[in-house]
Image (cartoon, rainbow, N blue to C red; front, side):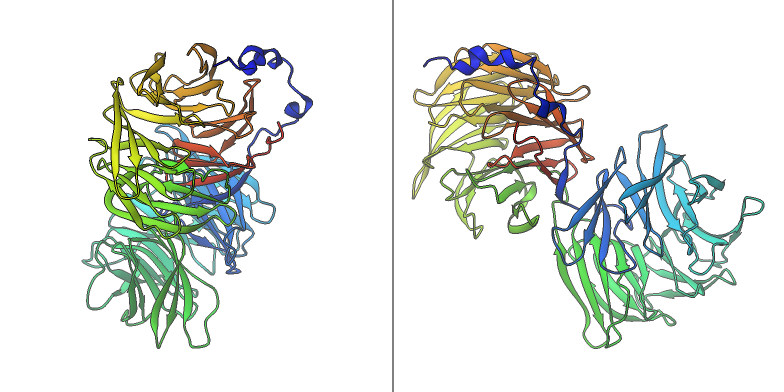
Length: 640
Protein backbone atom coordinates (compact mmCIF):
# COMPACT_ATOMS: atom_id res chain seq x y z
CA UNK A 1 0.00 0.00 0.00
CA UNK A 2 1.63 3.22 -1.13
CA UNK A 3 1.61 6.22 1.15
CA UNK A 4 -0.72 8.91 -0.17
CA UNK A 5 0.62 12.13 -1.65
CA UNK A 6 -1.63 13.94 0.84
CA UNK A 7 0.49 12.67 3.73
CA UNK A 8 3.73 13.81 2.12
CA UNK A 9 2.71 17.23 0.86
CA UNK A 10 -0.21 18.48 2.91
CA UNK A 11 1.61 20.74 5.35
CA UNK A 12 3.07 23.21 2.84
CA UNK A 13 -0.29 25.03 2.67
CA UNK A 14 -0.60 25.54 6.41
CA UNK A 15 0.81 29.09 6.37
CA UNK A 16 -1.12 30.30 3.32
CA UNK A 17 -4.73 30.98 4.34
CA UNK A 18 -6.93 32.07 1.46
CA UNK A 19 -8.94 35.28 1.29
CA UNK A 20 -12.12 33.24 1.72
CA UNK A 21 -10.84 32.00 5.08
CA UNK A 22 -10.04 35.51 6.21
CA UNK A 23 -13.63 36.61 5.56
CA UNK A 24 -15.32 33.76 7.43
CA UNK A 25 -17.91 34.67 10.10
CA UNK A 26 -16.92 33.89 13.69
CA UNK A 27 -20.26 32.28 14.56
CA UNK A 28 -21.59 29.14 12.89
CA UNK A 29 -25.18 30.05 11.84
CA UNK A 30 -27.92 27.99 13.45
CA UNK A 31 -30.51 26.76 10.97
CA UNK A 32 -32.91 24.77 13.16
CA UNK A 33 -33.15 23.09 16.54
CA UNK A 34 -35.11 20.13 17.82
CA UNK A 35 -35.77 20.39 21.52
CA UNK A 36 -37.53 22.13 24.36
CA UNK A 37 -36.32 22.56 27.94
CA UNK A 38 -39.38 20.99 29.55
CA UNK A 39 -37.89 20.92 33.05
CA UNK A 40 -38.12 24.73 33.38
CA UNK A 41 -41.34 25.85 35.14
CA UNK A 42 -43.32 28.22 32.94
CA UNK A 43 -40.70 27.95 30.19
CA UNK A 44 -43.25 27.99 27.37
CA UNK A 45 -44.55 31.51 26.61
CA UNK A 46 -47.02 32.62 23.93
CA UNK A 47 -46.94 35.92 22.06
CA UNK A 48 -50.14 37.98 22.57
CA UNK A 49 -50.95 37.52 18.88
CA UNK A 50 -51.30 33.79 19.52
CA UNK A 51 -49.17 32.94 16.48
CA UNK A 52 -45.66 32.88 17.95
CA UNK A 53 -44.23 30.74 20.74
CA UNK A 54 -40.94 31.16 22.60
CA UNK A 55 -39.20 28.59 24.75
CA UNK A 56 -35.70 27.91 26.13
CA UNK A 57 -33.36 25.23 24.86
CA UNK A 58 -30.11 25.24 26.77
CA UNK A 59 -28.47 28.64 26.43
CA UNK A 60 -30.60 29.43 23.34
CA UNK A 61 -34.12 30.84 23.15
CA UNK A 62 -36.18 29.49 20.26
CA UNK A 63 -38.86 31.75 18.74
CA UNK A 64 -41.18 29.60 16.64
CA UNK A 65 -44.05 30.48 14.33
CA UNK A 66 -46.96 28.19 15.18
CA UNK A 67 -48.30 26.07 12.34
CA UNK A 68 -44.93 26.15 10.58
CA UNK A 69 -42.72 23.37 11.92
CA UNK A 70 -39.46 24.80 10.59
CA UNK A 71 -39.94 28.57 10.83
CA UNK A 72 -37.62 29.25 13.76
CA UNK A 73 -35.39 32.08 14.85
CA UNK A 74 -32.91 32.07 17.72
CA UNK A 75 -31.92 34.48 20.47
CA UNK A 76 -28.37 33.73 21.58
CA UNK A 77 -26.63 35.78 24.25
CA UNK A 78 -26.76 33.75 27.46
CA UNK A 79 -23.63 32.03 28.69
CA UNK A 80 -25.44 29.17 30.44
CA UNK A 81 -28.83 27.50 30.67
CA UNK A 82 -31.87 29.81 30.39
CA UNK A 83 -33.99 29.46 33.55
CA UNK A 84 -37.07 31.64 32.90
CA UNK A 85 -38.89 33.69 30.25
CA UNK A 86 -41.46 36.50 30.27
CA UNK A 87 -43.11 38.40 27.42
CA UNK A 88 -44.58 41.92 27.60
CA UNK A 89 -48.32 42.42 27.07
CA UNK A 90 -47.80 44.22 23.75
CA UNK A 91 -45.48 41.45 22.55
CA UNK A 92 -42.59 43.76 21.70
CA UNK A 93 -40.19 42.63 24.45
CA UNK A 94 -39.02 39.29 25.79
CA UNK A 95 -37.07 38.96 29.04
CA UNK A 96 -34.95 35.93 29.88
CA UNK A 97 -32.92 34.90 32.92
CA UNK A 98 -30.21 32.29 33.28
CA UNK A 99 -28.37 30.01 35.70
CA UNK A 100 -24.66 30.50 36.38
CA UNK A 101 -22.02 29.07 38.68
CA UNK A 102 -22.01 29.52 42.45
CA UNK A 103 -20.82 32.96 43.48
CA UNK A 104 -21.31 34.55 40.05
CA UNK A 105 -24.00 36.96 38.89
CA UNK A 106 -26.76 35.62 36.63
CA UNK A 107 -27.74 37.85 33.69
CA UNK A 108 -31.19 39.03 32.69
CA UNK A 109 -31.49 39.92 29.00
CA UNK A 110 -34.31 42.05 27.56
CA UNK A 111 -34.80 41.33 23.85
CA UNK A 112 -36.52 43.32 21.12
CA UNK A 113 -38.70 40.61 19.55
CA UNK A 114 -39.18 42.47 16.27
CA UNK A 115 -35.48 43.10 15.62
CA UNK A 116 -34.36 39.93 17.51
CA UNK A 117 -31.72 42.04 19.29
CA UNK A 118 -30.53 42.57 22.85
CA UNK A 119 -31.96 45.77 24.36
CA UNK A 120 -30.51 45.48 27.88
CA UNK A 121 -28.28 43.06 29.76
CA UNK A 122 -28.89 43.42 33.50
CA UNK A 123 -27.07 41.70 36.33
CA UNK A 124 -27.78 41.77 40.07
CA UNK A 125 -28.97 38.31 41.11
CA UNK A 126 -26.52 35.64 42.20
CA UNK A 127 -26.42 32.10 40.72
CA UNK A 128 -29.95 31.97 39.25
CA UNK A 129 -32.83 34.13 38.07
CA UNK A 130 -35.92 32.27 39.32
CA UNK A 131 -38.73 34.14 37.56
CA UNK A 132 -39.55 37.33 35.62
CA UNK A 133 -42.71 39.39 35.10
CA UNK A 134 -43.44 42.51 33.04
CA UNK A 135 -45.79 45.23 34.31
CA UNK A 136 -49.02 45.68 32.31
CA UNK A 137 -47.64 48.77 30.50
CA UNK A 138 -44.24 47.17 29.84
CA UNK A 139 -42.36 49.95 31.69
CA UNK A 140 -41.12 47.78 34.56
CA UNK A 141 -39.76 44.28 34.97
CA UNK A 142 -39.86 42.33 38.24
CA UNK A 143 -37.15 39.72 38.74
CA UNK A 144 -36.77 37.12 41.45
CA UNK A 145 -33.48 35.48 42.43
CA UNK A 146 -33.12 31.77 43.17
CA UNK A 147 -32.60 30.18 46.57
CA UNK A 148 -29.00 31.46 46.80
CA UNK A 149 -30.16 35.04 46.19
CA UNK A 150 -33.83 35.25 47.27
CA UNK A 151 -34.32 38.92 46.43
CA UNK A 152 -36.97 40.80 44.48
CA UNK A 153 -35.80 43.56 42.12
CA UNK A 154 -37.86 46.01 40.03
CA UNK A 155 -36.14 47.24 36.84
CA UNK A 156 -36.83 50.22 34.62
CA UNK A 157 -37.21 48.65 31.17
CA UNK A 158 -36.39 51.86 29.24
CA UNK A 159 -33.07 52.50 30.97
CA UNK A 160 -32.15 48.97 32.07
CA UNK A 161 -31.41 50.19 35.60
CA UNK A 162 -32.69 48.75 38.88
CA UNK A 163 -35.33 50.94 40.57
CA UNK A 164 -35.49 49.15 43.91
CA UNK A 165 -35.07 45.75 45.51
CA UNK A 166 -35.72 43.85 48.70
CA UNK A 167 -35.07 40.43 50.26
CA UNK A 168 -38.10 38.14 50.14
CA UNK A 169 -39.42 36.08 53.07
CA UNK A 170 -38.76 32.35 52.93
CA UNK A 171 -37.88 30.49 49.73
CA UNK A 172 -39.78 32.51 47.12
CA UNK A 173 -40.46 30.79 43.78
CA UNK A 174 -42.76 33.06 41.77
CA UNK A 175 -43.46 36.71 41.06
CA UNK A 176 -46.27 38.38 39.12
CA UNK A 177 -47.25 41.97 38.32
CA UNK A 178 -50.96 42.81 38.37
CA UNK A 179 -52.75 43.06 35.02
CA UNK A 180 -54.25 46.56 35.34
CA UNK A 181 -51.68 48.59 37.31
CA UNK A 182 -47.95 48.69 37.91
CA UNK A 183 -48.17 49.62 41.58
CA UNK A 184 -48.44 46.11 42.97
CA UNK A 185 -46.56 42.87 42.55
CA UNK A 186 -47.24 39.45 44.11
CA UNK A 187 -44.69 36.87 45.28
CA UNK A 188 -45.17 33.35 46.60
CA UNK A 189 -43.02 30.53 47.92
CA UNK A 190 -42.52 28.38 51.00
CA UNK A 191 -45.59 29.10 53.18
CA UNK A 192 -45.62 32.77 52.15
CA UNK A 193 -47.89 34.77 49.85
CA UNK A 194 -47.11 38.49 49.80
CA UNK A 195 -48.58 41.50 47.92
CA UNK A 196 -45.95 44.24 47.55
CA UNK A 197 -46.82 47.91 47.02
CA UNK A 198 -44.34 49.45 44.60
CA UNK A 199 -43.65 53.04 45.71
CA UNK A 200 -41.80 54.55 42.75
CA UNK A 201 -41.36 58.01 44.31
CA UNK A 202 -39.51 56.66 47.35
CA UNK A 203 -38.06 53.61 45.57
CA UNK A 204 -39.53 51.22 48.12
CA UNK A 205 -41.34 47.89 48.12
CA UNK A 206 -43.78 47.52 51.05
CA UNK A 207 -45.05 44.01 51.83
CA UNK A 208 -48.54 42.95 52.94
CA UNK A 209 -48.86 39.19 53.69
CA UNK A 210 -52.05 37.49 52.53
CA UNK A 211 -54.27 36.04 55.24
CA UNK A 212 -54.80 32.35 54.59
CA UNK A 213 -56.06 31.38 58.04
CA UNK A 214 -54.83 27.96 59.11
CA UNK A 215 -53.84 26.98 55.57
CA UNK A 216 -50.13 26.35 55.02
CA UNK A 217 -49.09 25.91 51.43
CA UNK A 218 -45.86 25.90 49.42
CA UNK A 219 -46.52 27.95 46.28
CA UNK A 220 -45.44 26.63 42.89
CA UNK A 221 -47.14 29.06 40.50
CA UNK A 222 -49.27 32.22 40.56
CA UNK A 223 -51.61 33.61 37.92
CA UNK A 224 -53.91 36.63 38.21
CA UNK A 225 -57.28 37.10 36.48
CA UNK A 226 -57.73 39.89 33.91
CA UNK A 227 -59.58 42.26 36.30
CA UNK A 228 -57.14 41.77 39.20
CA UNK A 229 -59.90 40.51 41.49
CA UNK A 230 -58.33 37.17 42.39
CA UNK A 231 -55.03 35.41 42.11
CA UNK A 232 -54.92 31.65 41.66
CA UNK A 233 -52.07 29.94 43.48
CA UNK A 234 -50.90 26.46 42.46
CA UNK A 235 -49.36 24.56 45.36
CA UNK A 236 -47.15 21.54 45.94
CA UNK A 237 -50.07 20.02 47.89
CA UNK A 238 -52.09 19.63 44.68
CA UNK A 239 -54.75 22.31 45.15
CA UNK A 240 -55.36 25.81 43.78
CA UNK A 241 -56.02 28.64 46.23
CA UNK A 242 -58.30 31.49 45.15
CA UNK A 243 -57.12 34.62 47.02
CA UNK A 244 -58.78 38.07 46.89
CA UNK A 245 -56.22 40.71 45.89
CA UNK A 246 -58.15 43.69 47.32
CA UNK A 247 -58.69 42.10 50.74
CA UNK A 248 -55.53 39.91 50.69
CA UNK A 249 -57.81 37.15 51.92
CA UNK A 250 -58.25 33.44 51.12
CA UNK A 251 -61.60 32.78 49.40
CA UNK A 252 -61.74 29.26 48.00
CA UNK A 253 -59.74 26.18 47.01
CA UNK A 254 -60.08 23.54 44.32
CA UNK A 255 -60.45 21.10 42.68
CA UNK A 256 -63.40 20.66 45.01
CA UNK A 257 -63.34 16.88 45.47
CA UNK A 258 -59.72 15.78 45.16
CA UNK A 259 -56.23 17.19 44.94
CA UNK A 260 -53.90 16.77 41.98
CA UNK A 261 -51.18 14.16 42.60
CA UNK A 262 -47.56 15.41 42.60
CA UNK A 263 -48.67 19.01 43.02
CA UNK A 264 -49.70 21.77 40.64
CA UNK A 265 -46.87 23.10 38.48
CA UNK A 266 -48.74 25.54 36.20
CA UNK A 267 -51.91 27.65 36.39
CA UNK A 268 -53.50 29.82 33.69
CA UNK A 269 -56.77 31.70 33.17
CA UNK A 270 -58.76 31.37 29.96
CA UNK A 271 -60.38 34.19 27.91
CA UNK A 272 -63.75 33.11 29.35
CA UNK A 273 -62.51 33.19 32.93
CA UNK A 274 -61.94 29.48 33.53
CA UNK A 275 -58.92 28.34 35.53
CA UNK A 276 -56.59 25.85 33.82
CA UNK A 277 -54.41 23.68 36.03
CA UNK A 278 -51.37 21.60 34.99
CA UNK A 279 -50.39 18.85 37.41
CA UNK A 280 -47.17 17.04 38.18
CA UNK A 281 -48.93 13.77 37.32
CA UNK A 282 -49.52 14.93 33.72
CA UNK A 283 -53.13 15.99 34.21
CA UNK A 284 -54.56 19.16 32.67
CA UNK A 285 -57.83 20.29 34.27
CA UNK A 286 -60.31 23.12 33.69
CA UNK A 287 -62.01 24.58 36.79
CA UNK A 288 -65.03 26.84 37.05
CA UNK A 289 -63.99 30.26 38.33
CA UNK A 290 -66.28 30.84 41.30
CA UNK A 291 -66.93 27.38 42.65
CA UNK A 292 -63.55 25.87 41.60
CA UNK A 293 -65.58 22.88 40.38
CA UNK A 294 -63.87 20.50 37.94
CA UNK A 295 -65.31 20.87 34.42
CA UNK A 296 -62.95 18.69 32.39
CA UNK A 297 -59.64 16.88 32.71
CA UNK A 298 -57.24 14.91 30.54
CA UNK A 299 -53.95 13.13 31.11
CA UNK A 300 -50.70 13.75 29.23
CA UNK A 301 -47.75 11.34 29.21
CA UNK A 302 -45.66 13.21 31.83
CA UNK A 303 -45.83 16.01 34.39
CA UNK A 304 -46.92 19.41 33.07
CA UNK A 305 -44.43 22.26 33.65
CA UNK A 306 -45.90 25.02 31.43
CA UNK A 307 -49.47 25.97 30.57
CA UNK A 308 -50.50 28.99 28.44
CA UNK A 309 -53.91 29.78 26.98
CA UNK A 310 -54.33 31.02 23.42
CA UNK A 311 -56.04 34.41 22.99
CA UNK A 312 -59.69 34.51 21.89
CA UNK A 313 -62.61 32.22 22.70
CA UNK A 314 -64.07 29.62 20.34
CA UNK A 315 -67.65 29.83 19.06
CA UNK A 316 -68.83 27.13 21.45
CA UNK A 317 -67.39 28.99 24.45
CA UNK A 318 -64.26 26.87 24.56
CA UNK A 319 -60.61 27.89 24.14
CA UNK A 320 -57.22 26.54 23.15
CA UNK A 321 -54.10 26.13 25.26
CA UNK A 322 -50.52 24.89 24.98
CA UNK A 323 -48.88 22.66 27.57
CA UNK A 324 -45.22 21.68 27.96
CA UNK A 325 -44.20 18.55 29.86
CA UNK A 326 -41.19 17.25 31.79
CA UNK A 327 -40.33 14.90 28.91
CA UNK A 328 -39.94 17.95 26.63
CA UNK A 329 -43.11 17.45 24.61
CA UNK A 330 -45.47 20.29 23.64
CA UNK A 331 -49.21 19.68 23.32
CA UNK A 332 -52.08 21.75 21.95
CA UNK A 333 -55.29 21.18 23.92
CA UNK A 334 -58.77 22.32 22.98
CA UNK A 335 -61.45 22.75 25.63
CA UNK A 336 -65.08 22.52 24.61
CA UNK A 337 -67.98 22.71 27.11
CA UNK A 338 -69.58 19.77 25.31
CA UNK A 339 -66.58 17.60 24.42
CA UNK A 340 -64.23 18.37 27.29
CA UNK A 341 -60.44 18.50 26.72
CA UNK A 342 -58.87 17.09 23.55
CA UNK A 343 -55.06 16.96 23.23
CA UNK A 344 -52.72 16.84 20.22
CA UNK A 345 -48.93 16.38 20.32
CA UNK A 346 -47.36 19.17 18.23
CA UNK A 347 -43.67 18.92 19.16
CA UNK A 348 -41.45 16.22 20.57
CA UNK A 349 -37.77 15.59 21.25
CA UNK A 350 -35.39 13.68 23.53
CA UNK A 351 -35.78 14.49 27.22
CA UNK A 352 -32.35 13.17 28.27
CA UNK A 353 -28.85 12.89 26.82
CA UNK A 354 -28.55 11.94 23.16
CA UNK A 355 -25.78 9.38 22.72
CA UNK A 356 -25.33 9.17 18.95
CA UNK A 357 -26.35 10.59 15.59
CA UNK A 358 -26.09 8.88 12.18
CA UNK A 359 -26.86 9.57 8.51
CA UNK A 360 -27.62 7.06 5.75
CA UNK A 361 -24.72 6.75 3.28
CA UNK A 362 -24.99 9.48 0.63
CA UNK A 363 -28.41 10.77 1.78
CA UNK A 364 -28.68 14.03 3.72
CA UNK A 365 -32.44 14.44 4.20
CA UNK A 366 -32.89 12.18 7.23
CA UNK A 367 -30.82 11.27 10.27
CA UNK A 368 -31.21 9.07 13.34
CA UNK A 369 -30.53 9.82 17.00
CA UNK A 370 -30.63 7.58 20.06
CA UNK A 371 -30.97 7.99 23.81
CA UNK A 372 -32.76 6.48 26.78
CA UNK A 373 -35.38 3.94 25.62
CA UNK A 374 -35.61 5.07 22.00
CA UNK A 375 -34.22 5.67 18.54
CA UNK A 376 -35.73 8.50 16.52
CA UNK A 377 -35.48 9.28 12.81
CA UNK A 378 -35.78 12.95 11.84
CA UNK A 379 -36.37 14.94 8.65
CA UNK A 380 -33.56 17.51 8.54
CA UNK A 381 -35.29 20.27 6.54
CA UNK A 382 -38.52 20.31 8.53
CA UNK A 383 -36.82 19.33 11.82
CA UNK A 384 -39.62 16.90 12.63
CA UNK A 385 -39.79 13.30 13.80
CA UNK A 386 -40.52 10.65 11.15
CA UNK A 387 -40.14 7.46 13.17
CA UNK A 388 -39.66 6.41 16.77
CA UNK A 389 -38.51 2.99 17.93
CA UNK A 390 -39.05 2.38 21.65
CA UNK A 391 -37.41 -0.32 23.79
CA UNK A 392 -38.63 0.25 27.37
CA UNK A 393 -36.21 0.63 30.27
CA UNK A 394 -33.02 0.29 28.20
CA UNK A 395 -30.63 2.98 27.00
CA UNK A 396 -29.50 3.00 23.37
CA UNK A 397 -25.77 3.84 23.27
CA UNK A 398 -25.08 3.82 19.52
CA UNK A 399 -26.91 3.86 16.21
CA UNK A 400 -25.87 3.52 12.55
CA UNK A 401 -27.42 3.00 9.14
CA UNK A 402 -26.19 -0.04 7.23
CA UNK A 403 -24.63 1.34 4.00
CA UNK A 404 -27.17 -0.46 1.75
CA UNK A 405 -29.98 1.27 3.70
CA UNK A 406 -31.75 -2.00 4.53
CA UNK A 407 -31.64 -1.54 8.31
CA UNK A 408 -30.82 0.68 11.26
CA UNK A 409 -28.41 -1.11 13.60
CA UNK A 410 -28.14 -0.09 17.25
CA UNK A 411 -26.18 -0.99 20.37
CA UNK A 412 -27.90 -1.04 23.77
CA UNK A 413 -26.90 -0.90 27.42
CA UNK A 414 -28.32 -4.39 28.01
CA UNK A 415 -25.57 -5.82 25.78
CA UNK A 416 -27.76 -6.48 22.73
CA UNK A 417 -27.44 -5.40 19.11
CA UNK A 418 -30.85 -4.69 17.59
CA UNK A 419 -31.63 -3.99 13.94
CA UNK A 420 -34.79 -2.22 12.79
CA UNK A 421 -36.44 -1.53 9.46
CA UNK A 422 -35.77 2.14 8.61
CA UNK A 423 -39.32 2.93 7.44
CA UNK A 424 -41.52 0.94 9.81
CA UNK A 425 -39.30 0.50 12.88
CA UNK A 426 -40.00 -3.24 12.87
CA UNK A 427 -37.41 -5.37 14.70
CA UNK A 428 -35.46 -7.34 12.08
CA UNK A 429 -33.08 -9.24 14.34
CA UNK A 430 -31.56 -9.15 17.80
CA UNK A 431 -28.11 -10.38 18.88
CA UNK A 432 -28.19 -11.28 22.56
CA UNK A 433 -25.10 -10.85 24.77
CA UNK A 434 -23.15 -9.15 21.99
CA UNK A 435 -21.11 -7.39 24.71
CA UNK A 436 -21.56 -8.14 28.42
CA UNK A 437 -21.75 -4.55 29.71
CA UNK A 438 -23.27 -2.70 26.77
CA UNK A 439 -22.61 -2.07 23.07
CA UNK A 440 -21.01 1.37 22.94
CA UNK A 441 -20.32 1.73 19.22
CA UNK A 442 -20.93 -0.15 15.97
CA UNK A 443 -20.57 0.17 12.22
CA UNK A 444 -21.91 -1.82 9.26
CA UNK A 445 -19.83 -3.08 6.33
CA UNK A 446 -20.46 -1.71 2.84
CA UNK A 447 -22.08 -4.94 1.62
CA UNK A 448 -24.32 -5.21 4.70
CA UNK A 449 -23.00 -8.71 5.43
CA UNK A 450 -21.00 -7.80 8.56
CA UNK A 451 -21.34 -5.60 11.63
CA UNK A 452 -18.34 -4.54 13.71
CA UNK A 453 -19.14 -3.64 17.32
CA UNK A 454 -17.29 -2.35 20.37
CA UNK A 455 -18.25 -2.78 23.99
CA UNK A 456 -17.65 -1.31 27.43
CA UNK A 457 -15.44 -4.27 28.36
CA UNK A 458 -12.96 -3.48 25.55
CA UNK A 459 -13.71 -6.17 22.98
CA UNK A 460 -14.06 -5.48 19.25
CA UNK A 461 -16.30 -8.11 17.65
CA UNK A 462 -17.19 -8.95 14.04
CA UNK A 463 -20.65 -10.40 13.29
CA UNK A 464 -21.83 -12.13 10.12
CA UNK A 465 -25.36 -11.02 9.31
CA UNK A 466 -27.35 -13.64 7.37
CA UNK A 467 -30.96 -13.82 6.32
CA UNK A 468 -31.83 -16.27 9.08
CA UNK A 469 -28.98 -16.03 11.59
CA UNK A 470 -26.34 -13.72 13.05
CA UNK A 471 -23.09 -15.28 14.15
CA UNK A 472 -19.87 -13.96 15.66
CA UNK A 473 -16.91 -14.31 13.30
CA UNK A 474 -14.19 -12.94 15.57
CA UNK A 475 -13.63 -11.29 18.94
CA UNK A 476 -10.52 -9.14 19.19
CA UNK A 477 -9.40 -8.44 22.73
CA UNK A 478 -6.45 -6.11 23.22
CA UNK A 479 -8.05 -2.99 24.64
CA UNK A 480 -8.20 -2.65 28.42
CA UNK A 481 -10.90 0.04 28.41
CA UNK A 482 -14.26 0.94 26.87
CA UNK A 483 -14.42 1.21 23.05
CA UNK A 484 -15.72 4.73 22.34
CA UNK A 485 -15.58 4.91 18.55
CA UNK A 486 -15.07 2.76 15.45
CA UNK A 487 -14.14 3.80 11.90
CA UNK A 488 -14.17 1.45 8.91
CA UNK A 489 -12.30 1.60 5.61
CA UNK A 490 -14.42 1.81 2.44
CA UNK A 491 -13.27 -1.65 1.29
CA UNK A 492 -14.02 -3.22 4.72
CA UNK A 493 -10.45 -4.52 5.04
CA UNK A 494 -9.50 -2.52 8.15
CA UNK A 495 -11.09 -0.70 11.01
CA UNK A 496 -9.75 1.52 13.77
CA UNK A 497 -11.05 1.44 17.35
CA UNK A 498 -10.66 4.31 19.85
CA UNK A 499 -10.59 3.28 23.49
CA UNK A 500 -10.44 4.78 26.98
CA UNK A 501 -7.25 2.80 27.66
CA UNK A 502 -5.16 5.41 25.78
CA UNK A 503 -4.81 3.54 22.50
CA UNK A 504 -6.35 3.37 19.06
CA UNK A 505 -5.81 0.03 17.31
CA UNK A 506 -5.97 -0.53 13.56
CA UNK A 507 -7.37 -4.03 12.95
CA UNK A 508 -6.95 -6.25 9.91
CA UNK A 509 -10.49 -7.54 9.26
CA UNK A 510 -9.32 -10.40 7.02
CA UNK A 511 -6.96 -11.98 9.56
CA UNK A 512 -8.57 -10.37 12.68
CA UNK A 513 -5.23 -9.24 14.11
CA UNK A 514 -3.74 -5.90 15.05
CA UNK A 515 -2.00 -4.00 12.26
CA UNK A 516 -0.60 -1.27 14.53
CA UNK A 517 -1.55 0.84 17.54
CA UNK A 518 -1.72 4.60 18.08
CA UNK A 519 -0.98 5.58 21.67
CA UNK A 520 -1.25 8.83 23.62
CA UNK A 521 -1.73 9.98 27.19
CA UNK A 522 -5.50 10.35 26.82
CA UNK A 523 -8.85 8.55 26.79
CA UNK A 524 -9.56 8.39 23.05
CA UNK A 525 -13.21 9.42 22.52
CA UNK A 526 -13.47 9.69 18.73
CA UNK A 527 -11.72 8.58 15.56
CA UNK A 528 -12.32 8.97 11.82
CA UNK A 529 -10.64 8.16 8.51
CA UNK A 530 -9.99 10.89 5.97
CA UNK A 531 -12.02 10.07 2.80
CA UNK A 532 -8.83 9.11 0.91
CA UNK A 533 -7.93 6.87 3.92
CA UNK A 534 -4.35 8.09 4.08
CA UNK A 535 -4.86 9.52 7.56
CA UNK A 536 -6.73 8.91 10.79
CA UNK A 537 -7.89 11.75 13.04
CA UNK A 538 -8.50 11.25 16.77
CA UNK A 539 -9.73 13.30 19.74
CA UNK A 540 -9.95 12.66 23.46
CA UNK A 541 -9.78 13.84 27.03
CA UNK A 542 -6.42 15.60 26.63
CA UNK A 543 -8.22 18.25 24.47
CA UNK A 544 -5.95 17.40 21.53
CA UNK A 545 -6.91 16.62 17.96
CA UNK A 546 -4.26 14.39 16.37
CA UNK A 547 -3.63 13.52 12.71
CA UNK A 548 -2.02 10.07 12.22
CA UNK A 549 -0.54 8.34 9.18
CA UNK A 550 -2.77 5.30 8.60
CA UNK A 551 0.11 3.44 6.88
CA UNK A 552 2.59 3.31 9.76
CA UNK A 553 0.65 4.84 12.70
CA UNK A 554 2.98 7.82 13.21
CA UNK A 555 1.62 11.13 14.50
CA UNK A 556 1.68 13.86 11.87
CA UNK A 557 0.19 16.84 13.67
CA UNK A 558 -1.24 17.60 17.14
CA UNK A 559 -3.49 20.60 17.80
CA UNK A 560 -5.45 21.89 20.79
CA UNK A 561 -9.05 21.10 19.87
CA UNK A 562 -10.33 22.98 22.91
CA UNK A 563 -8.84 25.33 25.49
CA UNK A 564 -10.86 24.04 28.42
CA UNK A 565 -12.48 20.64 27.98
CA UNK A 566 -12.28 17.20 26.40
CA UNK A 567 -13.14 16.39 22.79
CA UNK A 568 -16.09 13.97 22.64
CA UNK A 569 -16.76 13.75 18.92
CA UNK A 570 -15.31 14.57 15.52
CA UNK A 571 -16.20 14.03 11.88
CA UNK A 572 -14.48 14.65 8.54
CA UNK A 573 -16.53 16.00 5.63
CA UNK A 574 -17.17 13.78 2.60
CA UNK A 575 -15.00 16.00 0.41
CA UNK A 576 -12.20 15.84 2.99
CA UNK A 577 -11.44 19.56 3.27
CA UNK A 578 -13.10 20.16 6.66
CA UNK A 579 -13.37 18.60 10.07
CA UNK A 580 -15.83 19.34 12.87
CA UNK A 581 -15.29 18.70 16.60
CA UNK A 582 -17.52 18.91 19.65
CA UNK A 583 -16.92 18.35 23.34
CA UNK A 584 -17.49 19.28 26.94
CA UNK A 585 -16.87 22.99 26.22
CA UNK A 586 -20.37 22.96 24.57
CA UNK A 587 -19.00 24.37 21.31
CA UNK A 588 -19.13 23.00 17.76
CA UNK A 589 -15.90 23.91 15.93
CA UNK A 590 -15.23 23.63 12.19
CA UNK A 591 -11.58 23.25 11.13
CA UNK A 592 -9.79 23.40 7.81
CA UNK A 593 -8.51 19.84 7.43
CA UNK A 594 -5.36 20.68 5.49
CA UNK A 595 -4.50 23.93 7.23
CA UNK A 596 -5.46 22.87 10.75
CA UNK A 597 -6.97 26.31 11.36
CA UNK A 598 -10.14 27.00 13.31
CA UNK A 599 -12.62 28.39 10.77
CA UNK A 600 -15.85 28.96 12.70
CA UNK A 601 -17.44 28.07 16.07
CA UNK A 602 -21.10 27.35 16.86
CA UNK A 603 -22.40 28.03 20.38
CA UNK A 604 -25.85 27.13 21.69
CA UNK A 605 -25.61 23.87 23.61
CA UNK A 606 -26.00 24.07 27.39
CA UNK A 607 -24.55 20.61 27.95
CA UNK A 608 -21.56 18.77 26.54
CA UNK A 609 -21.70 17.99 22.82
CA UNK A 610 -21.85 14.19 22.66
CA UNK A 611 -21.76 13.64 18.87
CA UNK A 612 -21.40 15.79 15.76
CA UNK A 613 -21.74 14.89 12.08
CA UNK A 614 -21.57 16.53 8.66
CA UNK A 615 -24.44 15.76 6.33
CA UNK A 616 -23.19 13.60 3.42
CA UNK A 617 -23.54 16.59 1.05
CA UNK A 618 -21.54 18.79 3.47
CA UNK A 619 -24.13 21.59 3.53
CA UNK A 620 -25.18 21.17 7.17
CA UNK A 621 -23.76 20.00 10.48
CA UNK A 622 -25.84 18.17 13.10
CA UNK A 623 -24.75 18.18 16.74
CA UNK A 624 -26.43 16.50 19.71
CA UNK A 625 -25.85 17.15 23.38
CA UNK A 626 -26.16 15.98 26.94
CA UNK A 627 -29.16 18.27 27.47
CA UNK A 628 -31.18 16.34 24.84
CA UNK A 629 -31.04 19.00 22.12
CA UNK A 630 -30.41 18.54 18.40
CA UNK A 631 -28.80 21.56 16.70
CA UNK A 632 -28.76 21.81 12.90
CA UNK A 633 -26.12 24.28 11.69
CA UNK A 634 -25.64 25.76 8.24
CA UNK A 635 -22.11 24.96 7.06
CA UNK A 636 -21.02 28.36 5.77
CA UNK A 637 -17.49 27.14 5.02
CA UNK A 638 -18.48 24.25 2.74
CA UNK A 639 -16.63 25.82 -0.19
CA UNK A 640 -13.32 25.78 1.68
